[in-house]
Length: 141
Image (cartoon, rainbow, N blue to C red; front, side):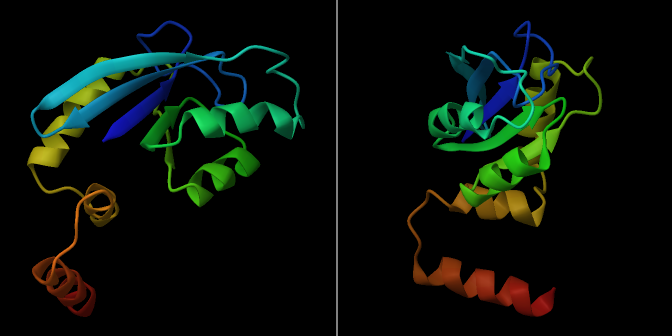
């Protein structure tokens, strides 16, 4: 799955989503993670209330499942969620991308939370047994 990080230095999750001039994208699965690309954005990104600055980011993040940020506005978060991209706020701007990815891979190999299991299944072909298990989980929860 593709995971994005709003960053100023490609090391830390230290950029506000709307103001981020670059977003690093990784592919992560149970075997580890791989850097894919850096998305770069220009223009007046720090102008509050300028919803037009979000559209290029939303298009560029198509196909991502998660985007980690240091901060995000309500409108931007809602627009990401509408596109099935989950925004996650870092605990602090000192959080390192590689540490978060390492913990993420461990989570994938352990017991991922329900929202993450659902995201993992999003791109996989469904069969009858998957549907039955999904219904069974909903009933027992």
